[in-house]
Amino acid sequence: MSDASWNLQAALYTALKNASPLIALARIYDAVPDAVSSADAPDNEFPYVQIGEMDSIPDDVSDSSAAGDDGETENITLHVWSRYNGQREVKQVMQQIKALLHGTSLTVTDRASAQVYVRSRRNFLDPDGKTRHGVVSVEVIHRN
Image (cartoon, rainbow, N blue to C red):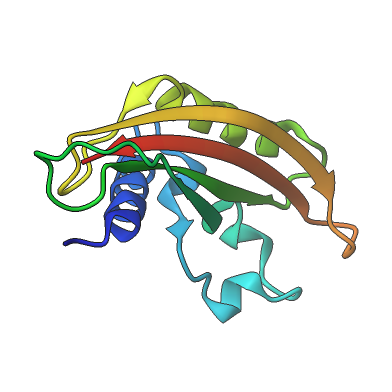
């Protein structure tokens, strides 16, 4: 059995990285490099998107003819980071993510289907007073 969650993350990364127009200048990270994530990072390292936390809920639907799991719903948090003075850039990046993903299907290795929905977007100023943080909540329903 494959790791469906990892395959889903890889498909999501590829979709974000290869988007046209470019999302966050194609700066898409799983693990953000220390030089970029530090409070002293230069402003030209922004904006960027980080694939963040996830939770998974099995759908518990059985099909005796199918091997392995039947499917699950994964909720994935995408973090958008910007140093633009104001909310414009972070909102634009979040809108690009929504336009790219919402209501679409991802091609995920070893999955028959993966439907994507953007469920919420929010942004706020980080405690450093100069970095804007956007949070995009994505739900993916994927089946074997």
